[in-house]
Image: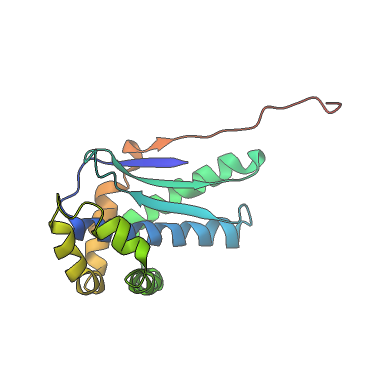
Length: 175
């Protein structure tokens, strides 16, 4: 698992872009780890925003692999992040992640979970949530490739990442 701190975000517009960035990184890593190496069924990358603690936001990337493949997959993840920073997110990667992201957000607009948990839960204290709901579709559709690349370069710095690995304890064969 990797954790990249995001000390603060400007507003809901940046939060939307960070969420899409997480999906793009996830897609790149999934493709390499799952399809090319067959090392894991899934790789997950999410942007986590914590309302009550504005300086405790972060990206997380994690996967489960065989302990014997852990070093190789760790190097692969690091290599892909460096490649995305250096060579950029491809237009194809951007569009392949953005379109499902937009579709999911459109579906969210028809769910009680979105309206109840995201918009209305504290609308009396945070009336900006109502404005955010109003511009959500247009703002999300307007996300540009260059914005996402800039955010990737800002937040996916391997020198700032926390890397964690857990390996099961080895037991004797007769136990």
